[in-house]
Image (cartoon, rainbow, N blue to C red):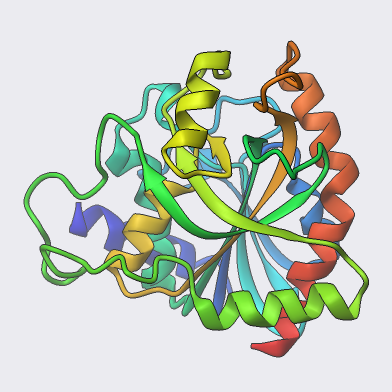
Length: 270
């Protein structure tokens, strides 16, 4: 895997003219942040050696290089999911590559179901911790010391320093944000009412099908992480309704402007 990571990073470096400082992974319906990037280079996933290809509607499948908020960034417009049939090493492979491209921080976004009774559809939730409930762990197998330790610490999976700055940015721009714990499940089904109750009782505020594996791998490589969920549906007793992927995309798109503003302004504070 290490040789694949290095060869993929070398290929990408041959196509770009600068070193990115911050990596960004954009979730379902959240690719619009790219419009705010002063784009220098765009590379389709299918052109990149060893890269998976996104198969989900709402994930366009491009690696975007440019400037955002005064920082050089690389943005994944479309991520990979375990439910697409990829193993966890494939799902998290781009994070490994971004580390070798030089990123120092990782920003992530996702669409998720809220299980906190105080949440509403369209809320933004800053993730301050997560519960890994995926059936496969991205660090299973032989550990590569060049990437990170055998038993990485996860006491601060999401950077407290970046969270504090993000909350200030939100307050300064009159954007209300929630904060809470995200639980990762494999999907691709949305949760049943009983599963939503389970998620809530386990201590989570939102549930989704991504983010956790990428953060685990980033922290394995000592990359500070920051993540925002857009609450696109509710798993709260009495508020659970039938939901479709299209509806999730629609809600995400409506809330995206607020998330984009926070991300962009946050870049300036780092």
